Length: 162
Image (cartoon, rainbow, N blue to C red):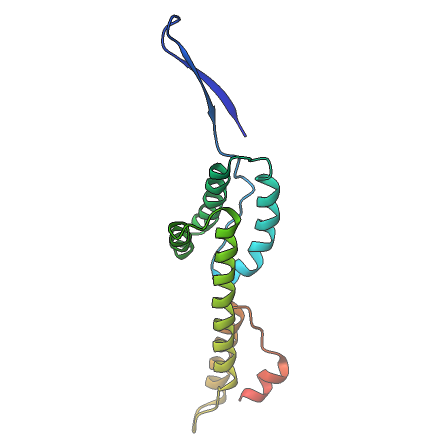
């Protein structure tokens, strides 16, 4: 935390204000998307707990958590997360409860996406008259799509699909 004081007014009627800023946020790393959130949240949770442990004022702690989450999303232009944080905040979720709700929501989304991509991969078939090179290209694109959401099809499944 940084603390500084400012004196306003003349000598006779001066008032001193103590200005407190938010805790430093240089420890906040970017989160790229929902799939990346699955891995990112582990480090964030530990670092946020450590960096915000000295904040006693509940409103200030809430603003610090919310600010750090928004900062993480904005570092990689993940606007959906910024909007989700705003929705959860409007629904009166505060501090780490806001983070927990976001984590639960994103974990559900990732599970749904993984299952959908897994199913697409398992349903790949060679179309009648399709060249083998074209089939392998389609499979490669589908495998990449699976990996993007955190599912890496086992080699046995890759061999069985086509």
